[in-house]
Length: 319
Image (cartoon, rainbow, N blue to C red; front, side, top):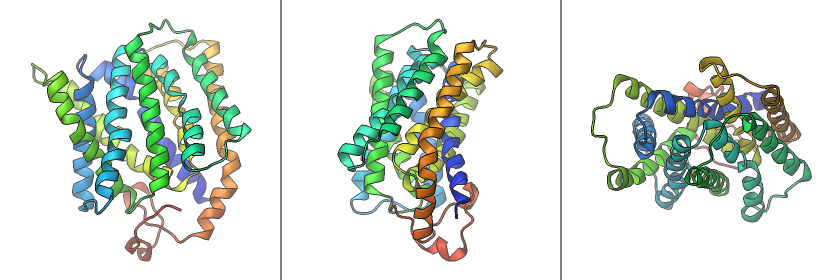
C-alpha cells in the first residue's frame, strides 16, 4: 500500500501543474479584459460534461454544501484568479497566491483542530520566499485591485480546501467535482451578464482553443485529481502542492515565451521544491498507514484506480 501514496501525490500535483499554465493561456489565447467570461467558460462546460458522465445529482444537505464549495473553490476563486491574471504579471499573482499554505494551516487549526507545527510554518514561509525569488527580478507592475483579487483568491480556495476536508465527500471525486463546477458556473452566469456582459464580437478559433484547454484539462481533469487528493491527503499537503503552479508558470515562460531565468529565480524554484518536499515527506508514512487501515474506495478508471470491481459499488467517503 505504501507504493500507492506517491501515485496519489503525483495525481494531486498534476492539478496545480496544469494551473501553472493558466496565466500563459490567458494572456496568449483568451480575449482581453474578460475575466468573468473566462471563469464561466472554464467552469460551467467542464461541470456539465462531468455531470453527464456521472449522472448523479446532490441530495439532502449536499445541495447547499455543493453551492458553498462551488462558490469558494470555483466561482469566487476563478473570478478572482482571472482578475489577478489580467491585472498583474503571472509571477506577481503567483507570489501572492503562495500565502495559501499559511492560510490553510491557520484555518485547519481553527476549524479542524489540527496542530500547526513549526515544520509546516517553516516550509510555508520558505515556499513563499522561494516564489518571491522567482518574481523579484521581473519588471512587475503592482495593481491594487489585482493584488486584492490575488489575496482573495488564495483565501477563497484555502477556505474551500478546509471545508471540503471537514464535510467529506458523499460520492466519488468525479461526482462531487461536477456538483461544485456546475454550482460555481451557474453562480458566475448572472455576474457575467450584469457586470461584464457578453463579448461584442464572436470568439476566434484561438479563443475557443484557449477556453477548451482551460475547461477540459485545467478544470475537468485537474479538479477531479485535486478533490481526490484533498479527500485522502492530510489537509495542508494539497496547499503545498499548489506551490507548483508558479514553478510551472516560470518554466513555461522560459520554455515557450523565451523569458530569461536569472540565478535568483533558479534558486527560488529550488527553494519552492524543497519546501514542498519538507512538508510532504513527514506525512508519507502516516498517510500510507491510513490507507492500510481503511477499506478501498472507488477511483475513476480514467484517472487510474487499481481498485477491484467490488470497490466500485461503495461510495467514497473521507476519513
